[in-house]
Image 1 (tube, rainbow, N blue to C red):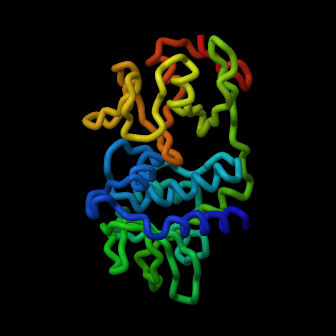
Image 2 (cartoon, rainbow, N blue to C red; image 1 turned 60 degrees about the horizontal axis):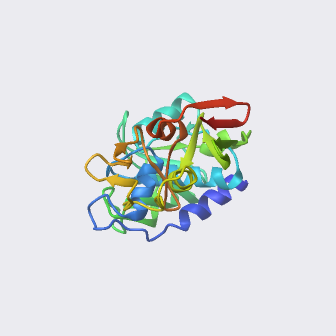
Image 3 (spheres, rainbow, N blue to C red; image 1 turned 30 degrees about the vertical axis):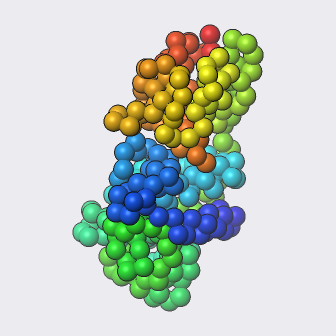
Length: 264
């Protein structure tokens, strides 16, 4: 299945990513995992990592990500139960959850191979010793246990939904296309800020720019000294915010006509 093959490859490409400094739940790539899952502050990131992997594959395949956006193991597992995706036995491509109790999942990994009762995995926020509060992405070998539950995310990819795109039009003309995820169109801050006449704009966080800055205390982006409400998403080192939030911060009105978003 293209989704599973792509998911294994994407996760494997991150093998060796580490926290900076170790034990901090921080670091450029770790922060990107956390931002993608919706967090603006350091959190344990095993689920954030796998949500990022799923989302990256959906972007590559140009399909909507149908899974729950979260970095919380319990929340994702509960979504899996409601969607009828939870199994007791593993399959390649499953997300395996380690349960401390029936309703308390404390860690998650991606199943990359199954050999009887032995599985190979790749997982984040762990280490070679198996600590679930570790510091890196790494491949591991585990024995299947009764305390594991497996969410078969590939099942919800059987009927992929094409990702939505919208053309963004400003007062001076087209500003390019925006991708919408779960009904929200995300705007790259640097591109939009430059197009709307601001100084150079931000390429990465932290931001150092006369018009755009990164507020480390509140963990948010400020534009002309005003905080952009809502979360910031990091993708490939770039910062994105919902276009409606950015427009409101800049004093623009937003209207949607078909596949066109207009700023006035």
